[in-house]
Image (cartoon, rainbow, N blue to C red; front, side, top):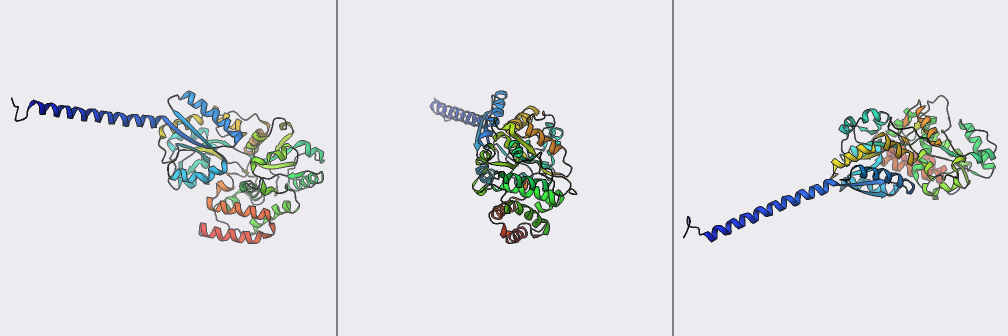
Length: 427
């Protein structure tokens, strides 16, 4: 018997085919949903960390995982110098969901190129506008916030109290003349006055920053950072000439260009050097046995008529624009920005919490740093390579290493920097 010209066997085959197609479609949708769910639950994070910083990071991440068991958090730790080289490539191609970085120009560099997620709504929703008011400007590019602030550093001189006393000093130098006198006495006592990890060029940039801030002030400094001042300006040369005095008098350790920050700590720990200009984070590198003999003081005043400004760089977390799991990335940022976690991170790193509701640091060195920034009237800079466009900063820091190696080449170095400034800023 036939039905509309189609036999029962044909109908059965068609029903079976349709059923198989439906099952296959359901299976495909299920697989796709499963893939989306798996992706939504996997959160990849890259952070820049020195060896002694990893445990602090990991403690915070462990607390996040405990509070958010549905998130498969995967953290990759990268050494600082390698991180700087790879950051741009990550953001432009296949980035993780969250990255650690720096505020100011370093953040703006990537925001300007559309490589960062706009976090303005997170600032408003999570109360960061109030809790992080002091660092909001540094986290902003063209009216939008792109960064979640973590700790920040005060810069100043770590020094060995016992070596100061042995050299006949009765207190911390507060003026440039007192500082030069201290260097003279320390050298006479047989100890290198100043350690500097010049292999890491940014450590030299701290010297330029502070001498410029103390000699010319923050307003001039920011104009220089913005490419608005020629490097052949007499005020710029004055900064280098003050620095040259310390180099000519051999107040720095020998062969400083051979040492990076990870290898410089033993100079202070073993009493081979008396002072080092560095951020408060360095306190985490000082063993407990030496900490009672370690003090911290503000960079001395060079010109009393210049308002006192400081470097206070802020470390941050960013969400790349191409991140795959922005939902959980925002969950992580909200967790890391709470007052308690912000304080825990700062304490572990020897930094200062940027959250206004966080507990003040109890570490003696961090306390001095906190008071230094709190009492600053001349402004807070982010740091040489965070206030300036990256290409100019790289050239400037390379020139600092060359200057440190041979100060007699100063004029030619400044002329080269000026040519570079004109090319980059077209001014």
